[in-house]
Image 1: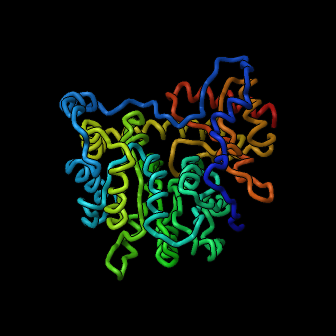
Image 2: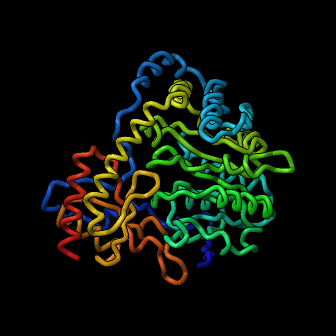
Image 3: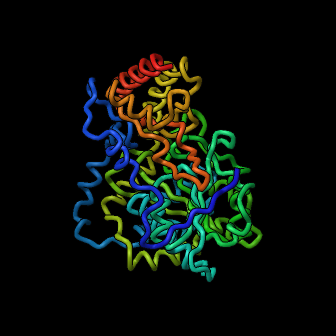
Length: 411
């Protein structure tokens, strides 16, 4: 398997239109025969932490103030402390220059592409951005707004749903300014190990590109905490001194703490990159409100609500295993809150999505809509559907039972 060049220019259509708009067009006005159950959007539905309302009330007056673009000292310290505890970083995070607040990780994933292009100044009219395929659609938008060429790296089960680093063209890597990777992967829910992450870091330093490591599902795991890019970098070291050179990790409270509407995340890692990026963000990006940063600081200091959140998801994965595995084999991924189900023997992602909606009222997302077609017409998501386990357990069980019955009839 090799990566395939796919070129996009400013002003051109995005590589893939919004997958949810495509889903709406696919299903049209048809109404199912049963009460609908949506299993499409990855929007957490568990309870927020109990301290949120009180902290917002305590800090309500700070909505009058313009927030500092580099975040409050309390926010930066809380994020650095959490990263240090979670990944055993021995205090290596630069609290002053190595942490930035974001309006959710999406903002950083997109604005960061412009900063990577400008800071590296490779002298290429349309530098490369490496994207996994399937991918979070913001990665494609980032390549578009940075006037870059997107090189799609198929993520398939034979390589643990991770891009095959050994297949990459060195010429493409020399022209790369940003390499997007998610671990745990989205939508598949699998995790890169330390050797894989270190191999990518070595490539970034050899070919001079930045890694944007999307780790927003890092705390939604089954048993074992997934390793992270900063952890891999610490173990690898750097003789040039900057341990986190070429690494930007992005995370948020959306999945970890069920606070998707708070729009508060962070970028952390390479202090040289981040200290330059903050100057650009001071002109172009919206600040994160101070009360939101106060909530975030408390959330990163509390693990009890995260453990309960993880327990609730794991209950639903146990239900999925019980209901679907007799038909499909093991279905539980290492992390995340999606099922990534191979439905090739039922006709593929689009046909199964249509059939499930029409006959059972269960709305899922075709995997083909989360990936882009390659030049040879292949699409690594074509055989899969994504099923979100965000609804309460009873509703999730109902949807899974309907799916199993339908699949069993069609087998």
